[in-house]
Amino acid sequence: MPNHYFSQNGLTACCTDTTITLFWDKPAPAKAVENYTILLNDTAAGTTDKTHFTLEHLHPETEYVLFVQWRGGGMGELTVRTTSAKHRLDVTAAPYFAAGDGKVMNTSALQKAIDDCTETECVYFPAGVYLTGALRLHSNMELYLDEGAVLQGTANPEDYLPRIPSRFEGTEMECYSSLLNLGTLDHTAGPNCENVILRGKGTIASGGKLLASRIIESERERLKEYLAQNADLVSSCENADTIPGRVRPRLVNMSNCRNIWMQGLAFANGASWNLHMVYSDQIVTDHCTIQSDGVWNGDGWDPDSSTNCTIFACEFCTGDDAVAIKSGKNPEGNAINRPTKHIRVFDCHSGFGHGICIGSEMSGGVEDVKIWDCDMAVSTSGLEIKATKKRGGYVRNVEVRDCILSHVMVHSVGYNDDGIGSDVPPVLENFRYERVTLLGRFIDHDHMWHPCPAIELKGFDEPGYEVKLVRFKDVILEDNNGPAQNIQMQHCQNVSFENVTVRAGVPPK
Image 1 (cartoon, rainbow, N blue to C red):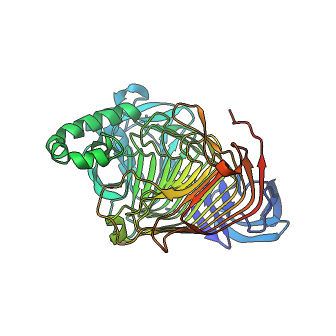
Image 2: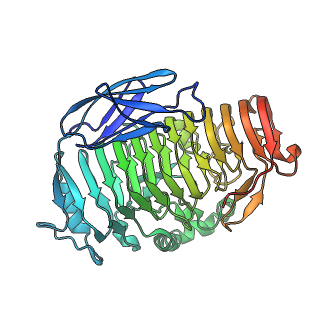
Image 3: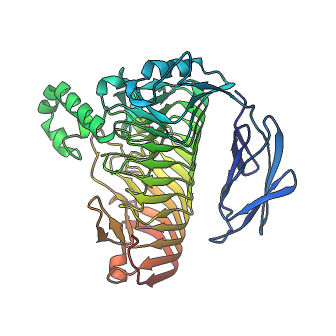
């Protein structure tokens, strides 16, 4: 498959035959708002105040030299070659004849189109609603959903069989197949599915809450004897659905994948998490919407023991975390020891949900996370780093800049805490928050605003495992009954505050 991913000199790009989407880290000395000029073959092609830019109306199989310039100088140079124009495999045409009426089951027809797709082709969905069960993608292929096209998973559990090796809440186990399945899980190996593009203007959706409830009830019956014999374990879980709910499928499952690009689509109503990448590398998601409001555990975008994952220019309205960064759960996560690192989240907005979270399953370690230009004001958790004392592992080197957040938390939590504990608590250290606005109030599932500390830092009550090396600079705290209630700290070391302003605020709508 012609390469669609390029990265060099601080610039990264994903391309089609006629477009290039370019992105870069916000420079360390950059102000809250900066202007960047994009040069294409030494000619100015456009300006932006974002750290991404899309060039259109290009020529297929053509080499372009890109350069980003700003007041601090040049960002570097990147040479990109656009792909060839791909032949469309129209799923409604011969030999597939898929029906877009939202009634006919199309699983076999769509799977045949996917199996037939070569590196010079794309599976094309015109406008319509294509009802289907689980589908399995392969390396070197593309799905394109046109405007008005909906790839709609059913709400019937049997349509997501067979169960496949997966990982949920940090533990490897067999789960129902997801709507779209990429790669095969193997924590001892590298990628086995590469170079896949999911893009367009359509929607990929699944059975959501109804599918989840049916699977949970079926699994509860299957585990009836086990659950009865382990009543103490069940009572320690978040709720009675926790254990039977762990087999639910994702919307898109990426296991041992590399170089996956998702652009322009709406993703909706997975039975649990929506986009889950585990043991994967180079996953890019941009200009997408992810919606799962009302779905329990309805996370949006979850890099899990994965590296070099980037999401930007996305809109969230989720039933749980918009972004959840994970790396396994004790003791398995400690033993597998595949950290999540080099994660970038920028120019994203929450319409509802829990916001951006790291953990609580972080036993394999999380490091080098950069978040900027995000609006997570309308969220339950704002930006949360969470672990339990049993987790082990670490979270370190997290940088947050130019964001609006309901609040900030680095703390221990008590849920999802089954499993054998590590010999030592987690290490939580080196967090930087600069030019952030913290509301000191959050919106819960009742869609009402509730006051809370704008900053909560609570480490572990064991020497050496405090929350440490935390810096707040140029921070605005919206008033919440005075500074004593705005900032709460316990078991912390080396926390600094520079230029903190307290002002009156009004909750956003």
